Image (cartoon, rainbow, N blue to C red; front, side):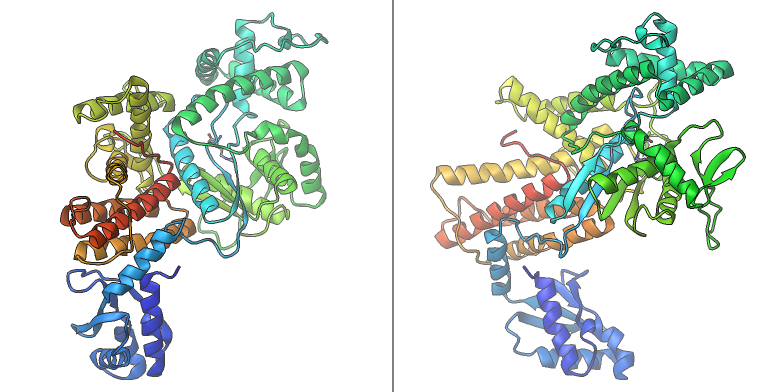
Length: 587
Ligand code: ARG
């Protein structure tokens, strides 16, 4: 479907071409002065030099060329030579009917679908998820929805952190508490129990306990490092323990992610690629990709034109352990072998930029991936009211689960205050409150360009007014209720007819959908989807205020307005789903 902007661009481009100027100058956009005209073209300004004429003279020539174009109802030359364009009403009507008839409400597909892996979420086994993981999850999930919707073959992977030092910390902490478990007896040869020796609560207690102890005490830390190395080298009891830690964590994580409505295709982790590491290291050594440095094996990745020095990637530490970069390289190999992606997106905070730069360069150098096929999708921090990284009142890291619960409680309170949901059954009320809570958290996050830091203000996010997730759900619910009433009265939608400027304005917003999705896709930036949904909801509000739907007496006008409402709802629901939001039927 070609948008009105693109149709106008083609016409005006042809007019430029006809007077011997480059067609690209005909690029048309929505006007920044919609009070003057809805569309504009500034090409005459840029053409003046080429044409050796005043811009206004060029604009007049173009206008003359366009005289009689049935798409254009009015064309004005403003100021030094801006073209202000008002399309004919039937242009809006045709476009609205095409969008209404389209299952995808005007959204297109990528030209050449690719296989895209999205690595996001990235929680660490045993360490509770914090708000940084929230950003990765919400952003990564929106990107997987968007890429899939546009036609790519997407495989998402949570990439659990389950292989590093934190595992050694956990193993040794449990050993201190329960030394008699068979996992710690090197002589034990029997089968290990299938019941996990710990619960998720144990894990969330053991880890901080161990981390704090190791910080204070070098010997304690050395013990954990030794256990990490033994675990990685394959010590049976430790591996069995690790398997329990992972399964207990995954069960808890699945619960949290279900609550948030975030899905992963693969639940792989760092530990899954362990078997690939020895060969990978041997290969890197044999081909001279890795070199020896102070007892460690490193890959030098600095380039002459680097603005700031990039340290080598440590492939094998001087203690013989695989590090974060090693597992990331082995994961690239694993993904190449098992999925074969054309592109991998890593949705990880921008604090890890150097790490990913090292990994990507090492992967390209070793021929594990094609130059440019690995992308770090960076994001900023979630801050507290003091502008610093969000902390709990006690100064600890803010646990994601607490934040989700708090949002749920506030959502219930807000619904009650607003007198919403009063006629819902209790279970349904909770379901709606959950949708409102998730919408609040997700939209607040996604509406910012991802590298922007934002301040976490639950009260503002959860409001039903302003640019918030709950406002958008409320608008969608409003349209749903109009459609339900229409159905109950036996009223049906019919072809769109433009009778009011608010109708044309709504069609313009509907028509901007695909461009917004394309921008969001290209920049890996769902904030463009957020801006679009918000503008659409507002355009619908203005339309609804100006143009009665159900009370309208004229049958064709009423049917047309119903069609506009129905189309708006379809596009709203698609757009909301792309940012992970779900609107209830009633609230
Ligand atoms: N577990 C890591 C963390 O919490 C994030 C993992 C990101 N993905 C990756 N392939 N390194 O910081």
